[in-house]
Image (cartoon, rainbow, N blue to C red; front, side):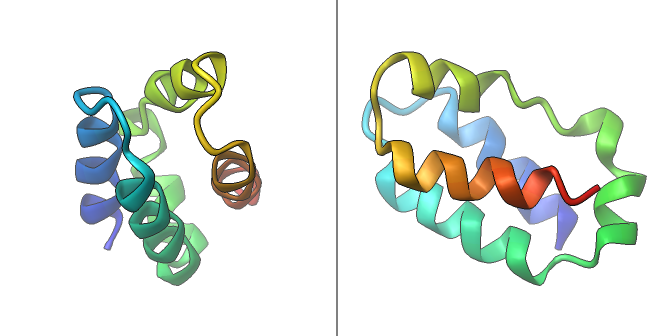
Length: 72
């Protein structure tokens, strides 16, 4: 499951309007156990998410995802 989150994070960096990918990432992060996310923490590159914040993409979706990531 964490691998799927990593893949979606990588895809976000390449897309212009990643709304569906943001929703998919949100769903995946809700189902990934915290222990699994902690194991993969070094590989979770969050730069693409912050880039999207700068580009005014769906702020609500981004904030939901960031809140989920803050759990660990």
